[in-house]
Image 1 (cartoon, rainbow, N blue to C red):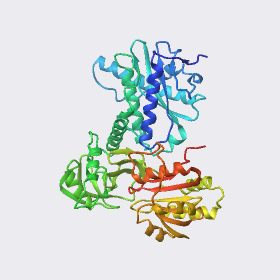
Image 2: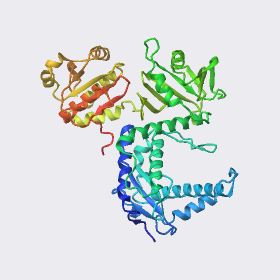
Image 3: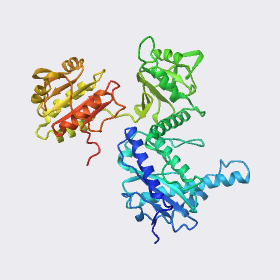
Length: 496
């Protein structure tokens, strides 16, 4: 049985592959997706028995039998649905057929890699191929991600709306952007020496992916035209009204949707690009009532009935959460968050099981009732609307004394939820010991810079990172940002 040949398709193929992998890793980091992607380049010549791979170090592509990919793709092509065949010239049909064959080869390649021993715990996302200049090889870029964390991310189930291929999630849209950029480079007039995207381009890729996902959601809701929603919502959420920060939402759905219940119908609809008018109209929205948007304009105020079937996936809500922040949701699932034009995956709420696991790892000497006390404190802290920090330190009494010049020491005592809410009204962290006794409030944390901060996050988050990096195994930190984001340090979600 023939095996895949693992060699370079062209001289700088390995460098190009590494460049794609580096940008993919950086882009995943930007959106808050903690994965370690690998990249393969798989080439096909006229001889289907000799596929060529430029492999990632950890993927071991030689164990995959790819010799059946071409035949598998041809079989899928022959069985395709021809009922919507396009009408056009012979040249048009040749181009369409070539696109079909390439698409089916990408699917067959994905499945073959998934069946391999190396691919048992991986999900493979395969791009369109392009002929690499001077090689007579058509090369597909492939991004491989760990299956379990990838599958745990929020995604829609719909795959097509008519002839339109749906982008099922923000992370899928990001991978599409990366693969399309890689295919464009591969098909250039000269074989690429490196990936054309650099570290500085990663934000542009992420923003483009967010726009593509929002466009896909608009199509699912019944709006088939290019939508300006993404840019409009950034401007609407950043616009105050009479000094107030906006809140409320847009219901993206067709007015013909049987589960949309109109409450108020505007005689003159408001275009989503009319920022001031939209911001004023947003004052009418609340948790139940939303501005009804068809993708281009707001036509009134409506609510979604309790009978809405979430499997229909044809009604979505864009919630403005605070100034400059908004979130895309379907039913009870958050799909995308934008904070001051920066797209990211919504962070899950602090989970009791995860918190207890981390607390027990940091403080193995603490028994379960005390961990429950810490969990109750963390829950109270998470409800602070203006943000706060709760620091649990093994030597809280000593730390309170050490930090006394920049903290208010208190006699050790347990705080209930109301007391914690009161003391969190001042700047600084709340310092407690593993038994839940508070030793200081208004604590200004110290710590040396470690290079692990995030310049897009505020001073609260970065000071917590510096402090935790200095203290390490002595403490855990719960950080509640003003926009509601909750971080836990250390973060053991992706350790074995």
